[in-house]
Image (cartoon, rainbow, N blue to C red; front, side, top):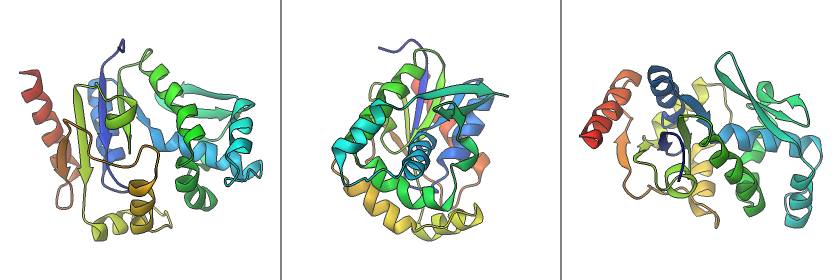
Length: 213
C-alpha cells in the first residue's frame, strides 16, 4: 500500500514517544514525524483565525481554504500554514489548551490523514501519535505502544515546560468519537515508567529484530 518503510509509535502524552521516535529515526536514517505537531500547527492557526470549534461546518470550510505544507530543514520537518513557518509556536500555551478539542473534530483528522499518508509515499518514516498504528497506518509491520504511570508522565510534561493535565488529555484522547487513543492491533506495548531512553530504544530494536526474523 505504501512505497516506504513505516514504524509507528503510539501512546498517551509524555510516555516517551517523541524521544524514542527521534532517536530511532536518526539511527535508521528515517524521517521522524510527530503527528501532534500537525494538530498543534492547526490549533495555532485556528486560534489566529478565531475559528469556532463548536461549528464543524465552519471548521471544514476553513480547512478547505488553508494552505498546509511541509519542508525538511536541517533534517527536521517544518510546517507551513499559508506560507508561514508555524513550527516555533507549537508549544505555545494557547496551543496546549486547544489541540485536544481540535483533534476531536472529524474534518480535522480527515484533513491530516491524507497528508500523513502522502508522507509515506515520499519517505521512510518513524511516526508517533495517538492513532498512527490503529488508523493512519494499520498495515505497518512495526507498531509500538508506549505508556507510563500518570505521575511520571506529569513530571516529564512539567520538565518540558508544558502546562496541561495529562489526566485530562488522557480522557479527551481516549473517549473522543473519532480515532480514539487505543493500543493498535499487533502493537508491542512498552511501559517506560522505569526505563531510560536508551533502554526504551533497545527494547524497540530488539522487537524489530524478532519481527524481521
